[in-house]
Length: 362
Ligand code: PHE
Picture 1 (cartoon, rainbow, N blue to C red):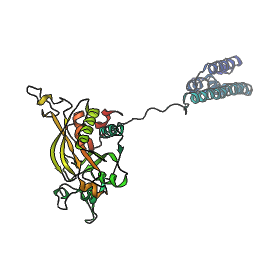
Picture 2: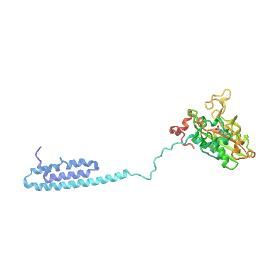
Picture 3: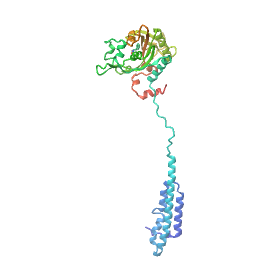
Picture 4: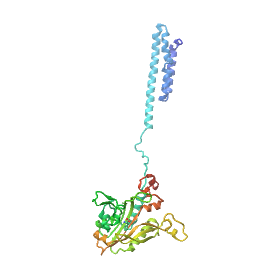
């Protein structure tokens, strides 16, 4: 190690070391520059530290004098350093407070909005069409008593539809409860609880013991309609269905009735809707093939008919005075045709990737 440089202890050398330190501190603009300034002016190899080490090299009588001078300088620089650090810390605190402010009045980011299920949307649109004609919305339970689901609707005790392959029975064995197989039990519930005349439209989920595949689901959606009044005829049924078809699927779209059988209507008919894609043109000679209706020109949508007097009697309505019509249609196929959905499971699996593209269509 080289000999201590005692000249560092001379008053003007110490003053210039002090002044350099004070100038450097004054020029320090940020807290993170401070350690370097400290090392340069107060660290082991700073002029002040070297001067302290040189004290031993002075002759005895000068040591005390030089030590005092050094201490004064050291205290001044140390005090200036402490003061500057306090100032810079305060600056930093002010800046952090401003930069990291939480604006509690700011609007939150938008949450994902999800989408309405197309079955819900079509149900609401269908119900709206009837409500606009003065009908009322009615609903009934999905767990239904056999009496409403079958007996009151004139199903014989041994009707095949009651058998296990069609109907989901609920235990215990004598509970008398089933998952409703159609929305028709709400016909009876409506007649029992409302004053006549009755005009109700009934959207709802129904259940059958069907295995799930691309075209069958043990749960599906129906829309039921019931009109019971004095003087109701089949013409009213036709007119109502045509009005509904036009409002729902396009102006002028026709309906077609084909003879059929249901225990609760007499006469009964299958209800076909003219294909809304080709409007029947695919079935004409030379017509372009249509994928929606398989070039049939018509799409089967449900059943209908005049309310069987036995049903009116079961619901306490006098069939001599009142008559009515009823219809029931499946909504799943309507949604599938409309939106090109080829697998019915997509409607019931609750996967958002299916519903999101439908957006928030009202
Ligand atoms: N409930 C019948 C079905 O599920 C449809 C229907 C309703 C038929 C009303 C006639 C009258 O298939």
